[in-house]
Image 1: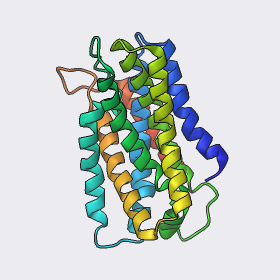
Image 2 (image 1 turned 90 degrees about the vertical axis):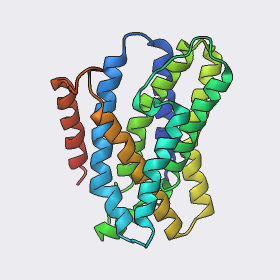
Image 3 (image 1 turned 45 degrees about the vertical axis):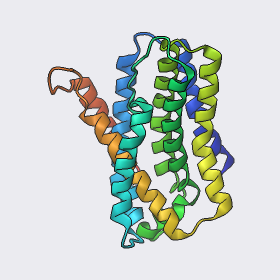
Image 4 (image 1 turned 90 degrees about the horizontal axis):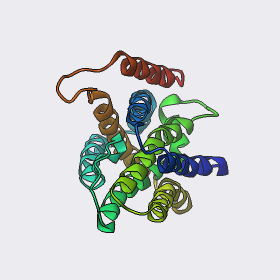
Length: 245
């Protein structure tokens, strides 16, 4: 990976969390719209690029790793309480154990996403059979587009739960290092092709869970209703994914 790619991963979380520090109130509508765009984009690149990359060098366990990623994300959200989807369920006068629980779920997820990043171009080549200058961007920008709103939600959640801004900033900084750390360690340790493929399959399953959860969430707690604005944003997200083909 190039230095600028590591910086993008890091800064996307810093910027998202930083915005949350200063704009805590009445921003849920904008957060939902951003998440809708990112959910549609993530679903698009998963179907168009990541899954074909996984199946390009299929082994007998590939489908199990995809399912494993889907259900692993379900388990991690028991810790993170759905912050990946922009859920902000504040606990008044929460202690640091509450914050560490959420941070643990987010960090494990972010680290796992980073593992296949440094060798994603190899897996992408498995099904494209050609040379592409922007192969890495499919996964990289998918991670960035849902990490930034997740960092925003984390920042707002911790502050609304009564935790101090300095502690919240520390949590954001830790969260921001996880995906770059996963990518860096993977690059340095050079795991085998099978391990990388399995890691990418886990990410694909995780992306499927996150994207579909975001898209299936209604705008009303009482009716299965999605506004036309959200529908339009979803279409834009899918269009952005299609433009990468």
